[in-house]
Image 1 (cartoon, rainbow, N blue to C red):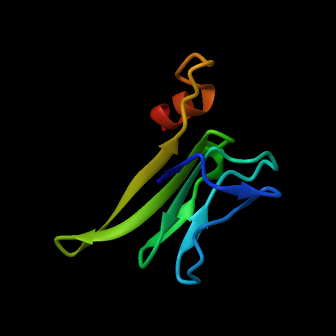
Image 2: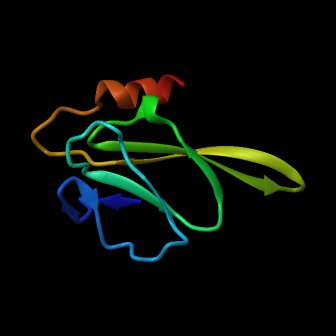
Length: 93
C-alpha cells in the first residue's frame, strides 16, 4: 500500500520492475493512494475507489481452501471529515 505515490503526468512512477501489478483509482486525477502486488492473485474493486482510496480483492489459500480478502489503501487528508462516502460503502459491503 502506497500513500502519495510519485506522479508525473498522471502516471505513477518508481516501481520499475515489470513483474509487479499496480492498482489505483480510475478517475483521471492524480491518485493519493495505490496498491502494488507481486506474485499474488488479485483484482481491483473500482466501486470502492477514488483519488484517496484504492481497494483490491486478494485471493489466497488457507488450509487448502481459497479465501478472499479485501485490502484498501486509504489516504485521509486532514482537511476532510472522515469517513468518506466510499469508505462507508466499503464498510457496508
